[in-house]
Image (cartoon, rainbow, N blue to C red; front, side, top):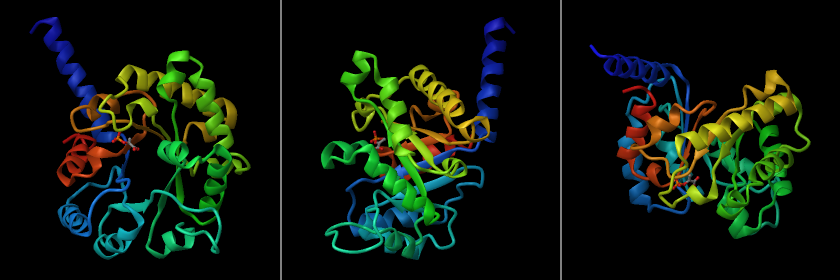
Length: 272
Ligand code: PEP
């Protein structure tokens, strides 16, 4: 056997080990998509599927369909959440979804500060931090999204921008609670564009963010905060991205809409 063959066998073994042992978080963000029939058909496909127990599998549908998730996923290992919440208990907030409503339907997660909410609805870090705080008080895990746009990346000052999004998004949160937040790094230029950050770019950024978290919040907190990557993740690229250092999982838009592609991604992240 020549040296290249041996290297290939060793590399494959390392990949298999990572995929079979590392615990990933796999969260689907459906955004404003699907009809009731389509939701039912997706749930039928995933409900009895064996996702294994290693990874945490989450879907965030549009809120009007949460009742179907509650009905269908009662005995499933698949968890679910909301794409957004309003940081008040109740009241005159037309069109908003409260945390109690999310809890009523069994939601365990809530996306906060997605770039679409920031750019289309003007949501800022301070507003995101209010949501993070009230979610934590209610035992719902916030998935705090951060990410730079193309212009910021080209200008080169985007790392400071990301750090500010984290610091301000986690403002006034007790140290132990910081561990309960999931951070999703989603470069805006890679969301819904088909353009994925390369595994090297993802690794560089995740290692940078991990180092920042350790430096800022101490090792016992910073090393445990899950760091997801999001941006055009699909079955064809998820394996390479999963090998990037400090990636704890993925936030997936488009490719989470189709049950078979969502299952395929999960299979890959189980080493199957
Ligand atoms: C997202 O919206 O969070 C996302 C990552 O979308 P996509 O996978 O479609 O790029």
